[in-house]
Length: 199
Length: 236
Image (cartoon, one colour):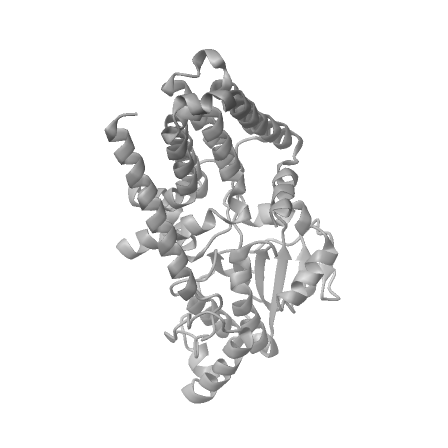
């Protein structure tokens, strides 16, 4: 059990750097930078939503979410995270992050290593234990985002102040691009282009 | 920021750094291929023998074990039959085939087939190819066919020339079906879709093995045992 847990955590962390995880990491990155100093709350909401939706999907407890709804979720997440009037409320940031996580997890078609593969085989009939194991795998994947969130917390508020609008609009733009790409069926093309640029 | 938050952040950063170092250190020992195929179905031969091995190494080792273990076709045929998981689908709406004269899935009817959904940009898929190649070389003469259903995740994986080039670079010598629109990736896997996904389809068209992801634990042994059983029993 412990060995499986460690394997899942490490495999998740390794997978974070594979192109097939970009569909999770890009919205996560956008969540962090859009939420700025509320990024902890936003990323907590994001991670929780990815875990719940991923577990429900991969254990065959829910069907696919229609792409129109996914696209709308990305747009809604952007609005919740960037609307200036409510930007200081952690609960709103967490909700925005959760909606972004819901959308991202709905698009996620993972590349699977040995440890996660073993878990997925048992997932349809699995109980709470399988949920915990999957949370370890996801913890590995979102570890880079957690570090980013921590860094955003460490940077003093006055330092971030001049670039706040840039961060806000950059993150919001990512969400709206994801929304449009999802609605038009080009989300794989957009992420694929990023992958090509990165290599 | 108060002291508690700072401590929490520092713990997180150190935990992340430790995790990263562990992953990097572990990566050196991570086997990239499986060399030691099971000597025969049901044997507990170690799958992993360290990085850097090639399919050729695996084949050579398997030749030795075949010669040494004394397992006969009769022994394999006497093993329990792999579970029948129901009828397999077919492959429709393809964008063509590579490395075969076949034009449809039905051209392989009556054969034991490994059907693997993969894409050349997926590292986990690539990590299975030497194992699949070894099985293809070993059991091909006994009637095994392998069909790699190439299902691209990203646009740059859709170009048939790029797929053909990748096939050469990755030593993929078996037929490749081009599932560019993911039609079969979705219909075979329904709501639970992953790369790679490996099935064994028997001569009657039924699924006898289904595995998600890379082969770990006993899954490769089970795959080879399934193929050994089916090829030794007339395909079903």
